[in-house]
Amino acid sequence: MGTKFAVSLMCMDFANAARQITVLNRYADSYHFDVMDGHFAPNLALSPDWIKALTPYSTVRNEVHLMAEDPGRWLEPLAEAGADVISPHIETLHANAFRTMNRIRELGCGTGLVVNPMTPFEDVKMVLPRVDLLTFMTVDVGFAGQPFIDEVLDKIREAVEYRQEHGLDYEIQIDGHCFEGTFAKAHASGADTLILGNAGLFSLSDDLDVAWGKMLDNYERAVGEPAGEKVCRD
Image (tube, rainbow, N blue to C red; front, side):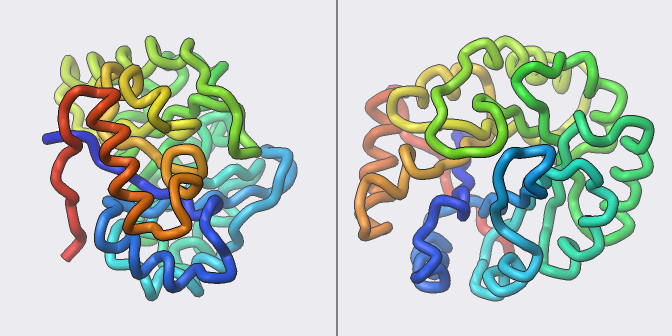
């Protein structure tokens, strides 16, 4: 099975959000919603209300990347907004890691976990049996357009090996400057899903049908093989 693609909706044209999602439903495997509290990440992004407004247009998985110092207070609003997967940062969970994973499941959502570039893979191992989606940041949190941090690639390879050795089935996702110039090394790391933002998708054309075709051409040229078939939600 080939690489899957998630789309970062923080990078979309907000004035035409519903129309863009209707187009992207034909191509994307999932949507990635960035939620920031202005403290853990030095920025503000999508809110539960905004997510609630967009998810009715989506026909694919809706995953929330929760960048907040107190993730527990956000879980219920995000589930009610239509999140299929909620992904807090390991750096914010402290003594509440297992409690938070359990609560996400109780709310009917898949469990995600996000790892910052400076956080060792060792810090997440105990929680991985309860995780559906493991996301590695290849930029520092907060703003789009930062350069890809190559040092994270060894950590991703470690996660791939650990999954196989321990019989786990978490999906491995890369978040941060995935585009033509980084597709090859991202693919070679063994990651399952790449998140596309401005550089990887939205800057390629205002016409998202055209942009997606260009992205696939860039991917195939960089990697030397086509991407996988889209996985649609029933």
